[in-house]
Image 1 (spheres, one colour):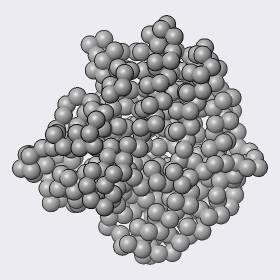
Image 2 (cartoon, rainbow, N blue to C red; image 1 turned 90 degrees about the horizontal axis):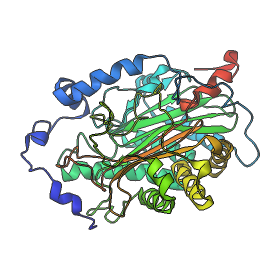
Image 3 (cartoon, one colour; image 1 turned 135 degrees about the vertical axis):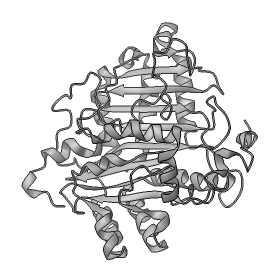
Image 4 (tube, rainbow, N blue to C red; image 1 turned 90 degrees about the vertical axis):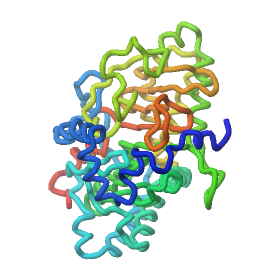
Amino acid sequence: MGSSEYRQYLFPHDHPRLAGIRGLDAYGYREAARKDEFTGGLINGWEPLYLAPFRGVSENGEVRPGLHPLETARPGERAPVEEMREMALRLVDVVSDADRERLSFPVDAPEWQTWANPEFMQFDTGLRLDFQPPAVQRAALALVEASLSPEGYALVREMMRINGFLGEVVDLPKILNEFSYNIALYGTPDSEQPWGWQLYGHHAAVNCLVVDGNMIVSPMFLGAEPDQIDEGEYAGSGRPFQRRVDLALELMNLLPDDQRAAAVLFQQMVDPAMPEGRVHPGDERHLAGAFQDNRVIPFEGTPVARMPERARELVLDIVEEFFSVLPEGPRAARMRQVRNHLQDMWWCWIGGHQPGDVFYFRVQSPVVVAELDHHCGVFLDYDTPRPFHIHTVLRTPHGNDYGRAWVTQWPSGNLEE
C-alpha cells in the first residue's frame, strides 16, 4: 500500500463538506456542528449519556466490587509523580489568572467525562490550546511528556501532528491543527493524594490519574486519518498502529478453525446479520468510546484461556501495545492485573483477517477493554472503512476509568480541589 493512497479520496476544494466550514475556528465550528443534521444528531444523542452518574463499563450492568483496590504502588511500579507534579505546577504558573481558574477542577469532578474525539468541540472543558500562547502549549506538552512513556508521548504527539497535517491537506487549519486540543487539571498536584490531567480533541483523548504512586491512563482514544504523513516537516512518519494490526492478524491466522469461527462475530464490517444500532454513525463498531462510561458490553467471541499458548501470548502483546503509553512501572502493574484475570478474558472480531483487510477487534476482561476499528471517511471521501483510518479505545471496566475507583477509596477528608 502506497503512503499516498488516501489522496485519491480527497474532496474537491470547493466541495460543500469543506467549503461550508472553511474559515471557521473551533468555536465557530462548534456552533455550526450543533446545527448540522449529522453532527447535531450525534451531540444530541451523547448529551444524556454524559449527564448520567458514573458507574463504569461492565459486561452485565453490575459493577464488581474489589477489582481495583487502592494500595501503595509496589517497588518498581511507581509512577513518575514528582516529575509530573513539577510540570503540572509549571503549567499552572504560566497560564493567566483567569485561565488558571478555567484550567482546574476537583479530582472527582464530572467534567472528566466531557472528553470526546470528534473534531467538533462539544464541551469546552479546561483550556483550548490553539487559543493559548506558545508558553502554555509547551507547558502542557511537558506535563504529558513527564507522565507518559517515551513511546507513549511520541504516539500522542504523532496523533496531534497528523491532525495538523490533515488540516493542511483539506485546508481547514483553524479546525484541524496540532494544538486543537483541550487540557484540564483535576485535583491538586501532589506526591500521594489523587490528581490528574486530561488532554482531548480530534483523534487524541488521554485521561491520566495518579494516587499513592499508582497510575491509570483511561479512558484513552487514539486514532488517525490518514495514518501517515507524506509531505512537509514530518514526512515519512506514521503507521502508529501497524504493530497492533500485525499482531491481530497473526493471532487470527494462528487460531484453530473452531476458535477463529467463534471469535468472528460478523463477516462484514457492515453486515446484514448485525442487530439494529450495532454500527453507530459516529463510533462505527466501537462500543467503549466517548460518553460510554456506563456502557454494558457483554463478553463475546472466544475465551483467551482456551487458546493455544502462542495465541494467548499474542493477545497479551496486543494489550501491552495499548498500555505502551504508560511508563515502565505502571505498565508492569497493569499487565500484572490483566494476567490475574486471564481466565476471564475474551477476544472477538468483525471483518476479514487477511493482510490488507479492514476489521474490528476487541480484547475484554473485567479489568480491560481494548478496541481497534477501521473507519469510513470523515474529512476524506470514502464511505466504506479503509486501512489508513484507524480508531483505538482503551477502558478500565468496573469503575476505574478516570481512576474513579481509587479516588473513592482515598480518605474523603484528605481530598483537595
